[in-house]
Image (cartoon, rainbow, N blue to C red; front, side, top):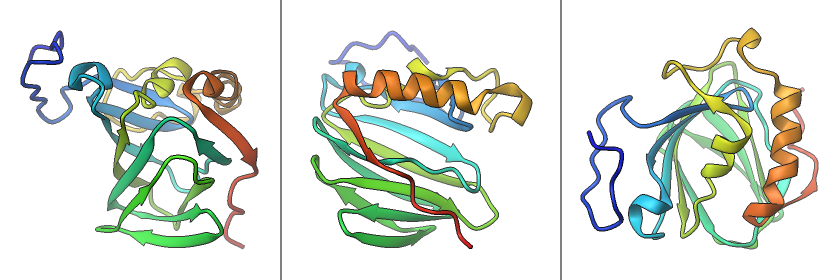
Length: 170
């Protein structure tokens, strides 16, 4: 399909056709960018390995929604922590502190929707183009370097880190 879509064009992406990025040990497959939707939304299919976690942070520019396709995750939103599994949906308005951790022994796959920003571009900046639509092997990325780039780039996207990740399961 044509990846040079304008905001007024119909956008169609077949399975594993969109740009893919390895970042923070995960795979981010772009389905639609804000540039392709006239700023209306950005959407990615995200796959993250068991144990992956974000720090507690807040988005000042956009709302976020996840629809979990496979796996399990703990999602802290404000003072509540929700246990999500395949088929779960969560919507988070901007300004709500949140964090999540992939729980269990399997990776998780979810649709990530951001409205109305291009937050998913952050992962393109901190990662690198994925040569295949799969999770990277441990020797194919540097988590420490990705985290450092994410921490440096996040403020440009209106993201503020305000606390540690959700603790790992005991």
